[in-house]
Image (tube, rainbow, N blue to C red; front, side, top):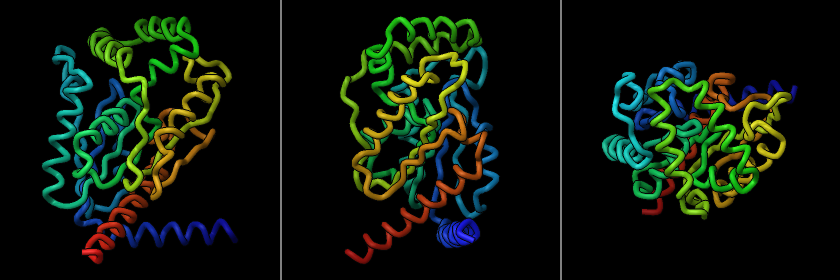
Length: 261
């Protein structure tokens, strides 16, 4: 009975948010080396009234495409946010590296972003903290990645490594008033390929997400060992539900702001 009541409540929230979603734009940003169609299963669950911006990064459009830095990807996201904000509220959804692009964009475009859904986001201090945990393992993982990674992505990855190796060592939490939902996988792999899949790696990964989320007063940090790193492909309905929950938060916040005025 409790499950039935919970399902009915979730449906009501979804329908309520959908009815006010015609002034919402959702901007998707995929993970490293991943094209935009990875979000298709999630988008299929969203109401048609929501405007969708889901573009593949230029560095992935062709094998001979010019590589881009994190700063360049952030600049492109900043432009998208600015343009989309002219039509209403903007929610940014990012997975892994896409989550890093989203949080870095916040540093210069906070006023244009009204909500976020972060799916297993990479943090700016990722390399620094994992190297502090086990530098030799991180370097060994880089070599394994190089063996599996297509040649046209290797230079892209090296740019990212160089950026994260010289990052500010302080992890800045998300803004307190920004409606945000974060997904964190706590699943420890029985045969981990990379340090992030080990018990120690998961503990550190979770602590970084906890720090990122610690100031948020209107949101949710969802932790589960039922899925791995690609939550959006394993459980796209859960990501869609989270997006609609943030839509509801953003809509309510907009109403309150209007009443305060």
